[in-house]
Structures are given as structure tokens and as C-alpha cells.
Image (cartoon, rainbow, N blue to C red; front, side):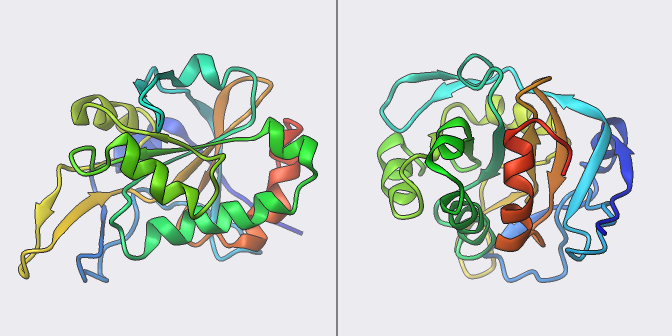
Length: 218
């Protein structure tokens, strides 16, 4: 039996300023923001929120160069939201590939209901074209969004996820420092009630996606 502890959204917001992961920075000592779940079956990969997050009021640009209103476009749809960047060599592609592989195991009808949204934390380099090219190699149905960094940062922080402007490491490599959680939003309430850490695997998502799509708690 899966055991998950519930936490409040406020607790995650309070923790958001504490820890970050710098993708590709070589700093293995950093942990993702606010990983406070207790899931015995998946190494603490899932947090259930007793007070769900409100979906961010984000209007950004999709991979076709069109305006994308997150709330309007995903209203009453099961939705997964992740903040990352295409030049990330490790956590970001792994997370998106895990979701994509699990998604392909769903029926076509369930796949059509699910929305997976990838919001870049590196908008200067992640143009609509670059996002589209990168996501096409993972799952062309994933929605890729870019836009003004301050807008993206505010949207992430409303979910307890901290992101910082890109910097250069000691070797001159550009890195984006960001939290690595995936937030799942219910199609029934539009609230973000599940938080997945970077420890979530294909198996984690394979087990949970059908229930998320049906508006149930995994």
C-alpha cells in the first residue's frame, strides 16, 4: 500500500526559498525545492497537498509563437506542469521522458485528455522554435511555453518552486537554477494537489496518471 503524507501549500511556499537544483552545474549537493513527501513505494517521490495550489495565472508564448493562457487552455483538464530548460543535461530531459513514456501507456482517449506543460526557466535561449524542436524529440504533444522571465518566475513561485536567472558556472557554462517538481492539477477542481519530485520514475507516473486523469487521488 502506498503511504503519502499530506502537507500544506503554505509550507511549500515557505520552503521554496531554501533549496534549488542547478541543472548541469555539477553541484550534486543541491536538492530540489521543498521535497517533503513520504511515499513508501517510490522513495518519497510524491507529496499530497491538503490545500491544493491555485493554477498560475500565466499567459505565455507556445512553440507556434501563439499566446497561451494556462488557466484557460487547461481548464477542467488533468494537467502536469514542470519548469525547466532545454539545455539541461540531466534532470529536465529525464523528468519529461519519464512522463512521456508513462503517457504512451495510456489509452488514446486518456492521452487526449491529459495536458503536459513545460515552462522554460531559460527564455533567452529557449525560443518557441527551440522549445518545439526539443519537445518534438520527447513528445510533440507536450505544450512548451516561453516568455518574460519575471512572469515565469512569479508563476513558479506561486507553486512553491523557485527559479533564478541563468548564470555561468566556474567553467563558463550557462546553467539555470530551478526547483524540479512536477505539479499535477485536478480536472475536477483545477487545483494542484500532487507534487512529484525528481525521484518520480516512469513507474510512478504509470501508476498515477490514470487516476489523475479521472480526477481521483492516486
